[in-house]
Length: 137
Image 1 (tube, rainbow, N blue to C red):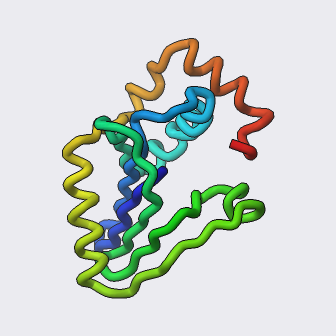
Image 2: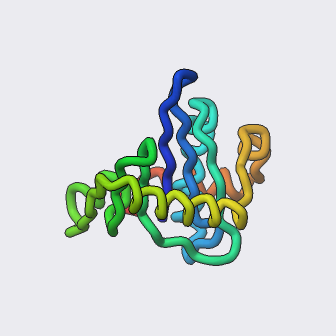
């Protein structure tokens, strides 16, 4: 469900997360969006892909390292699901993944902190409802 780009420079680390803007379960969507505030305050850029469902799990780091596979970065995937990722240490392949990422960002909407804070009552209510089962989603 997530693609991420991580780049380090003399000014720090830039993290860009590309998440699905469309998801088939609104409670799951709201449960994941409930953590956006913490991420945005930490300086992470969050985008939601608009054209359709995004199911890729890809992360690139500094143009030289990537992981791609079926694993979500959550406790359920690590502890219970039989998930698998491949790690790639190859600048050409990682560069191609970053090009795909950059292309997909063109079709994404950036979420900012002010916008997230202004989400509606219904969204916040679904976030609260998801608390007891969040680890299972």
